[in-house]
Picture 1: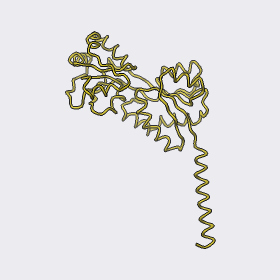
Picture 2: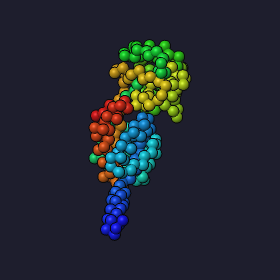
Picture 3: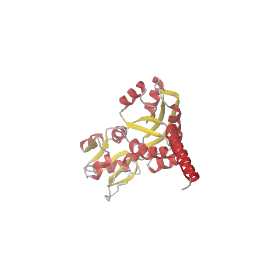
Length: 253
């Protein structure tokens, strides 16, 4: 290799190194706190897409509302993603910027049975009631969907009968109890049921019994990088993200 070629090779290598170093220097890292339920699976798909598209990095943790509130007050998060009601409360308390709230997705409660099992008709409140009464065991959670199930069975007049054969999932999805055969039929947010192997999602609760569970993002009032947090929110409202949300079983605003 002559002197000129050596010089050119060294120059190109130096330029590439500078470009890579510059990209690394310009990349941002933000911290997101989110609630559980369907969000770990949903965000587990969406965040790598955002990172790949932007070069930014997202550090996310999933916590209860009290721990999320503590992080926001301490300035330990740039963005929160959780139930809309909680985000509204954080905005009222001043922990989320007043103009930083964005509705991202709306979750609904679904019904599932073990894969291959007969699928009861749940198309009307009466038929759904009959399906619950016919089942030997009924699974639900202690979360927002489980609390709604208790409201529903109370409305249907079968609260005592359902509670007597309840399988309450703790620390695992309701779908896991269905797949193992512990629960013959079960209810949880559709986006929590879909990722579970070994079950068939029959459909959503009848419209008269359904509950919409909205999730929103809120930019922390003490965010260290509000601009990148806003960029992530913008991505979560993009067509690519909305397609993912729909596949996951979410409705989109």
